[in-house]
Structures are given as structure tokens and as C-alpha cells.
Image (cartoon, rainbow, N blue to C red; front, side, top):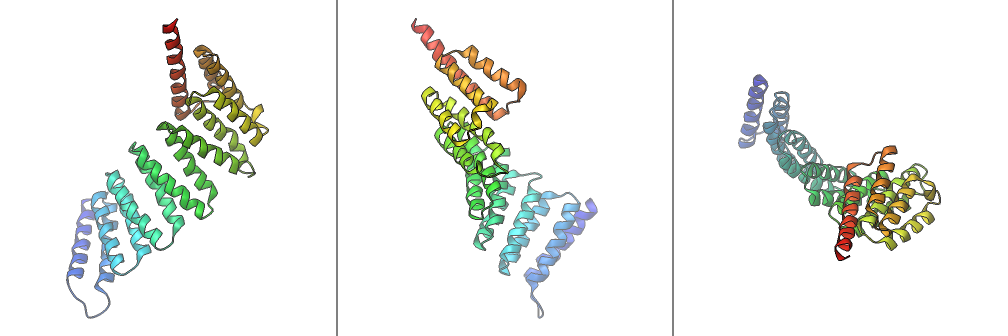
Length: 289
């Protein structure tokens, strides 16, 4: 590994020398590009990710001087892949540069792909608002390229994050729009009951029994098979428990469903919020009596 780092140092020095010198033949920048590529490869082989990332940034700058924006964007992606090993923020900065270049040259699908990756990176860092912003951008770009499945995946992320931030109307609107879009697609229609369950859970978090009852009627109109699913029964039973202000019944409904179909952490978190709100209401009324 030390040997690879030494070789990388040598190639990088030669590249810098090319850029600072002058040449009768060819382009000194072209020659530097080749040397920087060799240097970056050596640093990667030596697992010196910070040096590899820094060299890829220099390589991107060379490509920009040559007006090769696609190659520059690819170099920024390579820099990000190296930076991921030790600095998520540096990786995100490099990917953002790549996205801007891909947008500039009209490669919207590539820009969407790396916006989605940025969303994943910021989610990893638990920066939900930034993550949501990039997933929204990715969804719009995928939609413009008619890559519907990827667009919907990103939209679902936005909806989930919106709910986490207690922006329930936004989350509901997104989930319902995805369900409407998916019901007429033979490949996607089987996912509709899960999407409607997510929308219904967001309705429960609003604490509006009339709202969830009306929503369930809309969902049956959207998907006539929904009323026969366990997802529908869970939402209907939880709405009834809320109407009766029965925390025990609310808890039992969740346990029964979870024993058959495991609830993921997102659903569990939101259902706990709804349960706590119901319990607080029950306690408040007990204090008044």
C-alpha cells in the first residue's frame, strides 16, 4: 500500500509539472489528465481515499479546462466514491458538482440518479430536510424522463420524511397521488394497498376521525379490492378505536396486525405518535371528571 501511495505521489507530481510547464506538441492538459488518472488509481489501490478524492477533483478541473463536461462530471462522481470512505460531506459536495454538470449538458437521467444518491447520503447523516430536498429534485427529474418507478420511489421517500416532520397533509397528498398513478399499472397495482396504508396512518396522526373515515371511502373507490385487505381492516379498526377513545383497543389492533405482517420502523413511529396523542386526550378527559 505504501508503494502504491509513492507511485501515486510520483504521477501527481508529474501531472503538476505538466500543467505548470509548456509544450510544443499536443496539450499539456491532456497529458496531465492521463497522469492524474494513474495517480488516482494508485491512491485507490493503496486505500488512500482522501488523496484519491483530491486527485479526482484536480482531474475534473482539467476536464473543465478542456470543455469536457461529461468527463468532469464523471471525475466528480469518482471523487465522491472515494470521499464516501471517510467524509460524507466531501462526497456530497463532489456529487452536487456532478449533478450541476449533468444538468448543464442535458443528462437529466444521470442528474436524477445522483440527486437520489445525495438523498441517500443525507439520510445516512440524518439530515432529513436536505435529504428530502434531493429526493424531491430526483423525483422531478426522473418524472421528466418518464422513469416512473424511480420517480415514485423518490416520492415515497419525500412522503415518509414529510410525515416524520409532521407535515401530514403533504405526505398524504403524495401517497394518494402515487396510489392513483399505480392502480392502472399491472406491475404496480399490487403495491397500492401498502401505499394507502401509509396514507391512512398519516391520516390517523392528524387525529381527525372524520378525515380518516372519508379517506377510507375514497380509497375503496380508488381500489375496490382494498376493503378486503388486512391493511383496510387495520385502518378501520384504528379509526373506530380513536372514535371510542380506547387506547387499549388501538394497541391491540396494532399488535394483531404486527403478529401477521411486521410493521416497519416508520409505521411503528407514526402509530406510536397517534397512540400517544389518543392517550393524552384520554388522560385529559380523566382529569376533567
